Length: 157
Image 1 (cartoon, rainbow, N blue to C red):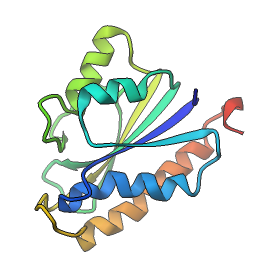
Image 2: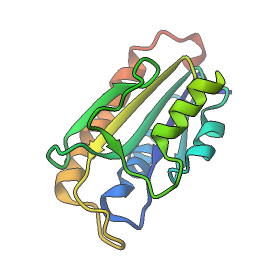
Image 3: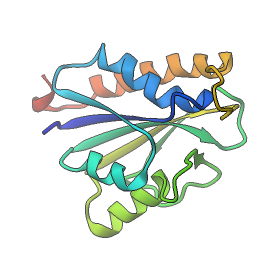
Image 4: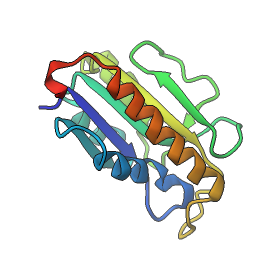
């Protein structure tokens, strides 16, 4: 059971929506062996199970808030109950926002849940990751690594 779990969310076949999965793959190569890195397609109910048992969860996903593509945002979901203008991108009936709210209601929310979002441009099927989002990908990977380094956790070494 991992003290820290990173979950990259997205769809490799929908343009910029792949960014969470690609970030997870980069992070998997650079984190401690005790930091678990998973990939998910964005089904909120599956996300409940993926978060189960972790002390801290870092979600990485494509978002839309009206900002410039490639812009990154960080939101502490263990404290925030409102998403504001931030909209995680989901093609599922129950997305990340609903999954977090449900986990909180059921008492299944990990102690700490951080969302690292990357503002996207296109969800076009079959499209490649846009250049602006590619820059956000590099930034989000570095932000997550920096946060992991700052976590005092004996299970992480």
